[in-house]
Image 1 (cartoon, helix red, strand yellow):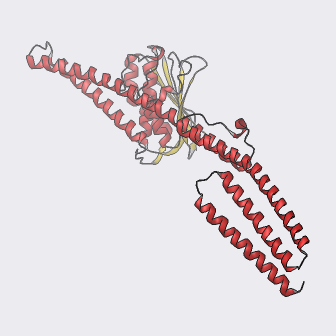
Image 2 (cartoon, helix red, strand yellow):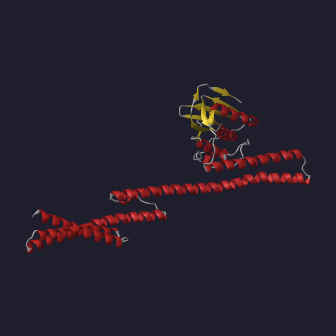
Image 3 (cartoon, one colour):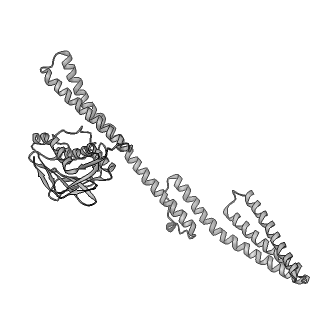
Length: 389
């Protein structure tokens, strides 16, 4: 076979393969919604047809005898038929794997747990990856749905509690105002003092609700400045010292290692004050509350130790849910510093997290509970000091 004939054979075979490929492409475009098995068989048939066409062209170009041409054609057709049969068998395996993925997608939409590739026995690598991704997405969606339901229930409970907390002081204000209006109040000045106190309580509750809404929305504006954490804790203790004294609770501030932190002193002071208020509310008369300030290279911490009944098992994380008040074991003490709606710890944690830190709670080995506010440290001072009530 000379060069010209070889070039003609190659060109003819390429032309036949192109025509077959174009026909297969048009067919696949027409049957876009057909099962994957149809697509696989079409591709296999196109490849076999292109090879058979090339063999026929080559046979004619080589001027073989009619018997040789028929033999070559028989070999090509039989081989092509077997190849298509193999494609059908192997395509069926791929189609079944695609069916598993289709069922998994349907389960994901219907809320049915999606099984992993290991659980279904899926053997094709790419399909296994897709199925595992679907299973992981299903797990994330379920976790998110559970969290949304939990938050929704918490919001409903919070609304109920806030409604009750607003009704109590408002009912007292109304009753005392009516007594003053009717002129039947035995001691008007005392009634006015009580009304002012109840108005202050409602005002604190509204302020707490506003703070929680800003924290939930991530809209808390921080005015950061270098602040001594020890001085901030001491100032908070000084603000509530009279309340602690009146309740017969000893309030102590221990600065083991001070730290200069880049924080919003007003907001962080509020977080520390909420922790101290919580400790005072749960410490009986004659007990003590200890505020400990210490700092390391990475973190600065304010730990508030109380001598209350401690935290019941399973309540450590719920303590920081907005509106959660806990069981009777940690029912409010006679000391009334916060608005009483169960928002103080949620606000403290939200403020700490806004500063890149967090608040945690554990039971102390010797009794009582320890609430620790930790934030990133920017500098530490080795000068310890102790301030007692």
